[in-house]
Amino acid sequence: QVQLVESGGGLVQAGGSLRLSCAASARTFSPYAMGWFRQAPGREREFVASISWVGGGTSYADSVKGRFSISRDNAKKTVYLQMSSLKPEDTAVYYCAHKRSFGITTMRGEYDYWGQGTQVTVSS
Image 1 (cartoon, one colour):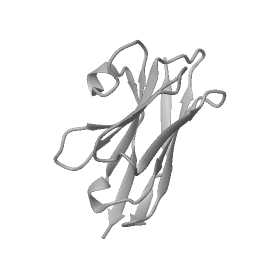
Image 2 (cartoon, rainbow, N blue to C red; image 1 turned 90 degrees about the vertical axis):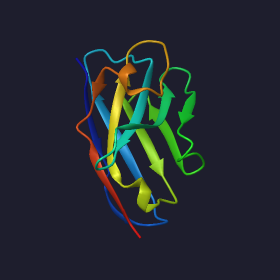
Image 3 (spheres, helix red, strand yellow; image 1 turned 120 degrees about the vertical axis):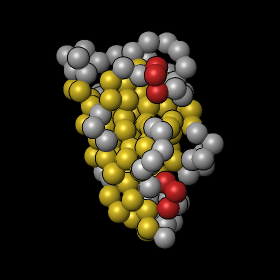
Image 4 (cartoon, one colour; image 1 turned 180 degrees about the vertical axis):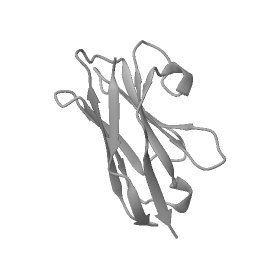
């Protein structure tokens, strides 16, 4: 069993920055990848970014490339999402997710554990 707890959300003006954190607790923690997804009101949950836990390879949604950066601290079992140049359309609940096995990292159905989410609101 893996528990994920996100933090770092909040209210920020357009153009501002936020850093989200996701801390994992588990007796053994060895995911294939960790990901960030987001869900805006009335919309489906969508992929934002992912990172390979061992190799550190990353993947980003086109909408956040060049503005968001995902990283991880293996020793702390924590994954981060640095968000810069935020736009009102980035407003959503952001979820951290754990993917146990090898495969596509951009699809939410590939992930087996989820955090409770943290709200990010970007004002114009």
